[in-house]
Image 1 (tube, rainbow, N blue to C red):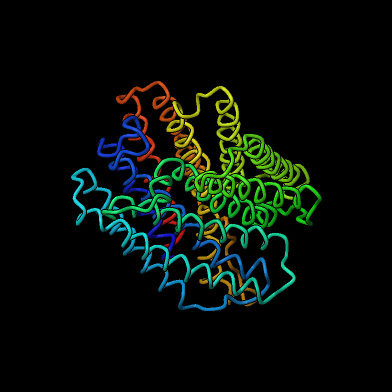
Image 2 (cartoon, rainbow, N blue to C red):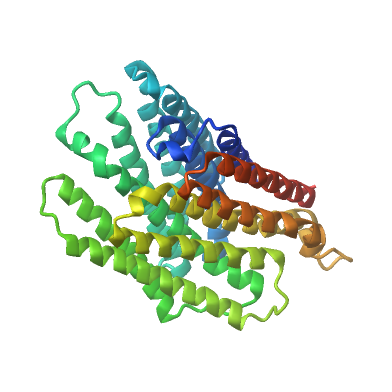
Length: 414
């Protein structure tokens, strides 16, 4: 719950920066002020949210106890301190002062330590129950990409502070950013979402969750395709041959893996025993649809040579419409579920206890979720249309909806 609380605080902070105009996607993804909001969202919100969820649900997936109950808190402290240092470094980056930019690799190193501590706790838990359940294999693969993301981020940060930069770092400052994004958004976030959602959605909807061929294909194709893209990019940085066909295979494999995953999710909804869907399942379907749409748009724009022009709009839709929408939708179930376990779990069988759904009021929360998804779509379109006024107005409404959803989570908790 501490991870969830810190993550929600980071999300609200990122939205405030966007509303006030301090962070402006229209200035470009590499603008220092934009990078503040990007890393507050990706590290502070999404990474802490996913780590918190994994600490809770890896034991469920593996049917065992978490290896350590102390490592998560230590990891959270390192990530929090490192993120604060990184944000300070990005804020001061415009001054091009080496002493100020030094906060970037320091902060990145602290974040890396936090990720290693948390990732090691999860990895050891998974390792102890070999052979791995398929859902756990998604998580294991995502942890490899998490490490790659952090290492690439530190390497990029060193470009700002080293007076004599090695040739590799100089080359990495260009295409290395796309590799950093591929490892983070594609590997760490997407694979974690896949592994956790396979378990959560089947559990919450009472749907059969036996692995299918498409489930194995989703893991192999998505992880393999992303790995191929990253390795190929690193080889090219070292002066290797430019193999366009390798990139195309990587993109095609990743896209095919995502399609297999979405086909499995559709089957969950079709074969579920719980016919009346709860709000978290409805909003999860919307979020996954947005994820699929943003990936499809990216795949269409890439061969047309337009992805660079609309990268900010597609990225915003992916981050806030898909990943954040899915995160908020599952928190709406996870928070009351964990609260019910803590308060009423031991009383089960000893007298009347409420249902988990009695801790929430869906009719009050539903309009706020709908407003959130609608305003996120408008904000993405505003970025594509380069309308700063419309973007800030949409994000203001998005912030209002997020605050209202957080209030609903607080009510369920208390």
